[in-house]
Length: 78
Image (cartoon, rainbow, N blue to C red; front, side, top):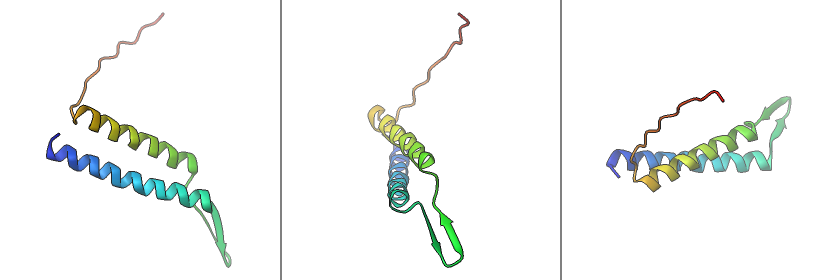
């Protein structure tokens, strides 16, 4: 894995940690009010989608050693 790819994996892992913390915050307290002000945290499905995407990216980069794979998809009308 190149240095750039290692940095990318570390960046993904850092973002993943932040999303885990955001998920925990939403699970503990989705919405709260202070006086007349109300705050609603981010949408849980959006957070979970980002977590899944980042986990997949980290897994792909670590499993392949960072090698990019190219696939060709041919749409077929059956």
